[in-house]
Length: 159
Image (tube, rainbow, N blue to C red):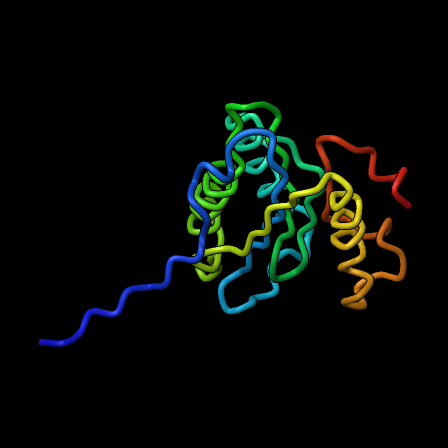
């Protein structure tokens, strides 16, 4: 009988994602397909993100969709907020939209996350995310990059 190989559990327990936490998530498009290159694709997925944020009482410090992945810096609004459920709901609902409208494009199975433990780390992470398209050579000034947003900040003030 063959040995069963189990996938390594790499996520923290769910309670670590509840409450007034700030977590940085990166979700990749499967096989790093370049997909978020036109506004309607971004806007459709943005709608699913905004609905998930509202449903699980979360805010987005910043979100930015690169061609083959998305950065989301999410903050729980109160003690009943759940940023892990937010990202899972977003991926599930946007993934279904992908399946219906772009059947060859899928989200990668999992995502990367990093819980920010200190409030002073938030501004540093926002800047890191906003400068991602500059580092990738897509724009010279991150303010020119169209596939981004925030439910907390006026991003023009960060330029």
